[in-house]
Image 1 (tube, rainbow, N blue to C red):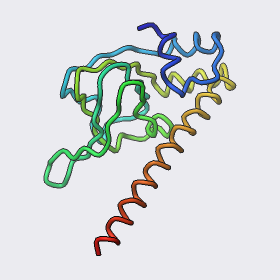
Image 2 (image 1 turned 45 degrees about the horizontal axis):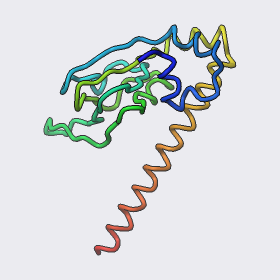
Image 3 (image 1 turned 90 degrees about the vertical axis):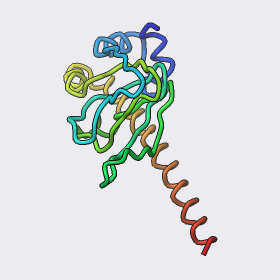
Image 4 (image 1 turned 45 degrees about the vertical axis):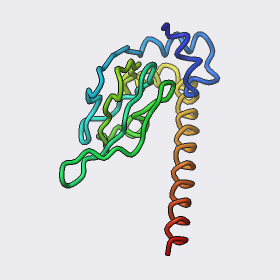
Length: 155
């Protein structure tokens, strides 16, 4: 799959022209992981945005007992690592390949250098990331309200 196909698959790239896509594709790195490989662990350095081209990953946390507790999944055509990409903090979760996966990675440091050269391009991408994070928060709020309502109804 070429990078042109990637741009159509992920809403983060919406509104970019061909020249901007060419600049951005210079920051991409393609990587594969096998089933049950850990993409990143909780506490590891963040700052990488992942675009899932193939497969499925689980977002997990370790319990105090050391058990792996999955709480979200990411499917083909979705991205992950958004929060640490935005703020550069360490990962607060672990990501595990549910199947053999293929991703495109983009490093925050490289993207920040592009910001100096092309602030309009990076502003478009950051805006789209913001929209995606809003969608995630709205979904989480809905789930929280549904769970709260369910618990109150059960007594």
